[in-house]
Length: 361
Image (cartoon, rainbow, N blue to C red):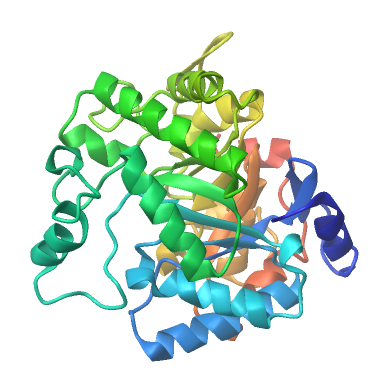
């Protein structure tokens, strides 16, 4: 489990990063660049490349690793687990995050996905058919219980530092918004119980659309409502203060809605997701920080010239981690070469608040 002592000792190993590279996560410190493990084929070759990249990242100054049980048919989690065991880094110095929500395959895509889901999850009694949206997504407490257990086994860990409910807005295609809030609260109660048992330290929501669209959007979820449900869940579970700490959402130069769209009610009126999260004491981790690779071809000239970095990828990473309230920008790192380039982004300072705001003028 990530600890204050281990992360601060980890930070002290490195003296070549620029200001604000390491940032607070509770009483710990974490790198403002994190390893993402979403992209890539579910193959042995991709596993080995990921393994080597994660080891290099951990030993080079990146102590945030993000995964999900469905990424690459559970191969990403298993590869993260091997890399954690092999890297010359204290496990307690690394923030390990994973997610549950999408029904995962096991190692490879089955010939008949529907039959696999039915036999593995429905016929076994793990999932009630009414809880399964479009045959692939579930946030029911018993399902998340099972998924967390499988993730811990895949990762080879006793405790995961951060567990996300994955893309809860997917449920809105089959349920009312009120029913989804109720389902999230039930899920949060179970996650509070798992936190009390020591199986996870913190939890949150990893979203795509939910927090960066306006309230009339079909996939909108209210961040204030979600936080309120987490607090209610903590009271019901008897755990005291809620363990809900984090949100994850896309953020890059082309997807800046989390900064620009005021969709969440704050004390002084509507706020953006980033502004509300900052005021509520939530950590924010950005996905798609380089547009899933698209920004490697370049950023808009008026933005690129304001950012430090030797390559478009480094400038894109620095844009994401310059946004107010962002703890870390997650970036896919499928090879050690990607890691070296991404580490370079941390050796130059992020934009200041005024300079960041000026990119939107």
